[in-house]
Length: 226
Image (cartoon, rainbow, N blue to C red; front, side, top):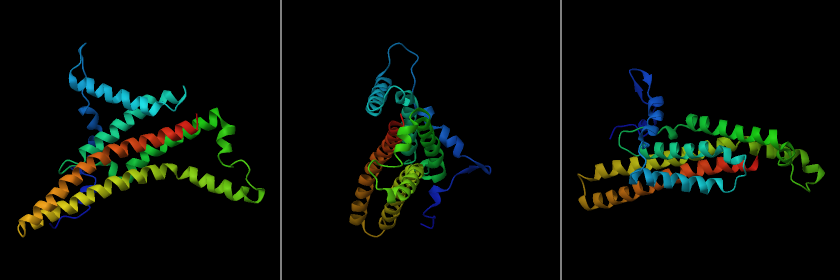
């Protein structure tokens, strides 16, 4: 019980070297592939989920936006598998690190914005000044819209970090309470353990939902600039 509450969020090391890179590269190894003409049920279910997710995200995009389909599908699979693996005991979740989430959000956001300025510069600049704005408010609105554009990648990263970190902290606290109550009051322990199981199910759903929300928002930024 003397373990630091935030110990699970410290980036692990192996012989003094950071192991985060190996952990980040591990989830893709869990995606099964098939070399046969007829796929098994696992491969078929996986392909069906990927097609369903891709269709859901690509419906609103035009031809230029759909060129990002492979990147967006890869992104949602990576975030989802990373979040789910982080729910395992004594594991490390890279998506609890704000630096990693910023490293994903900033290039994707910047790519979408740069594409918008290159292909539709008039429409891109029009977002900074809504139509019908009174003349005295133009400088203030341009500043506000510029700030709102620049904080989009930060909002993406902070949202993912906060949701995953909060869930892990809550599971840690309830798990510690379950262990502490096990030697004091058995009925209370069973109640807390039931709450822990329900919270774990909720966290599995949150891990998948946050992966979808992150990718969906990137898709919306792309849609606004294509």
